[in-house]
Length: 115
Image (tube, rainbow, N blue to C red; front, side):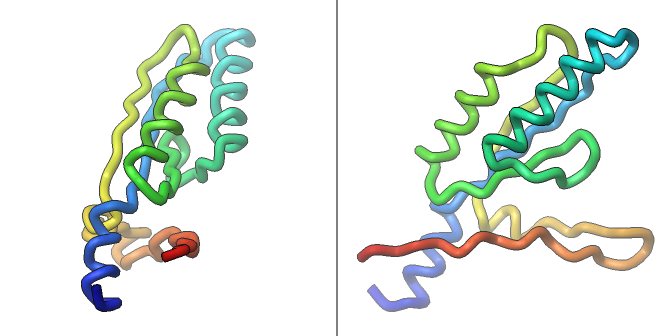
């Protein structure tokens, strides 16, 4: 398989996990729960895309499933959380804006290929 075909195939294998959340912050306990949730996302390798949107690059759909299961393990007791995946190809089609101009897309980590 040539490099171009392999690269094209990887666009559909490589996944991005998105976590959207809207958590209550009315009480001190709620704020602590929200902060703990964010810290656990960061510890699991997610990065902040926007204040309530975190993303994580995964080398395969199986790896994305692992991280989605981890997020489900530390869900806070209240609030709304949405977790979903996009392929690298779909992620590449997203347009991000900062004001009227296009914003820089988050860096994609280097992928290690053994074969």
